[in-house]
Image 1 (cartoon, rainbow, N blue to C red):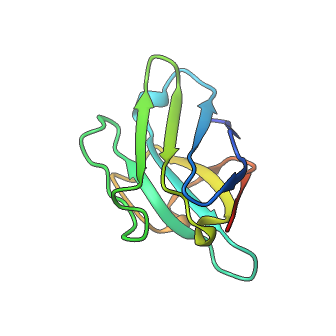
Image 2: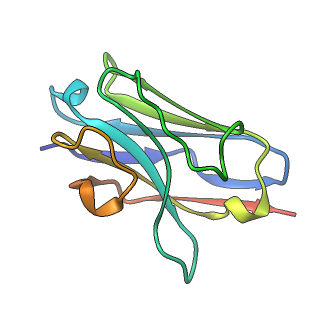
Length: 124
């Protein structure tokens, strides 16, 4: 099992940047596919970005391509989402997710482990 704790959310003006971190417990972090999802009020949870175990596969949602970057440090059991050029439509609760058996997925139900979420608010 793995426990996930997100941090780094907050309030930022449009065009600004935020860096979200997800700290994972356990000694097998490198065995997990990691992902970020987000959920805005009244909307379904949506895929943002993911990273394979090796870091070689990093799909992004079209809405964040070129603005967000996902990275992982297996030695520190951490995955980071660097968010630049933020827009008001990026406002949501951002969740870190992990799964040991999925190779890669953009579907929330394929991830078994979730953090508690961190709020990101982008003002116009």
